[in-house]
Length: 80
Image 1: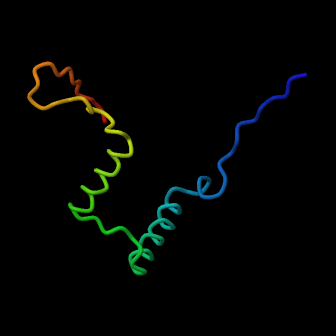
Image 2: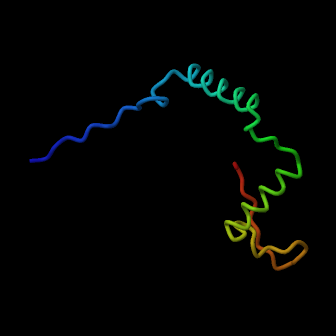
Image 3: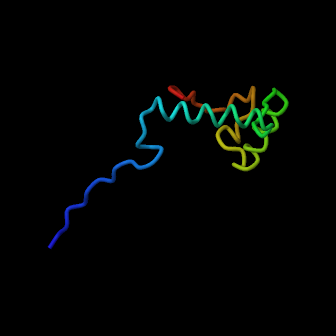
């Protein structure tokens, strides 16, 4: 005997109206800034975060690509 699998319905935050979600998220962001726990990004902080991410991913895309090397076979990623 086979049972019919019913698709799950979104619950909690996912089930809310998108405008209500946005209002709640906005309140959280404002409160984090008031408390001083929100991220404050400047170009130096962003560069440091990007460098850490690149190290964590072991270089990611373009790892073996060298600028000016005629042997590069780098593809441009469209639609990202």
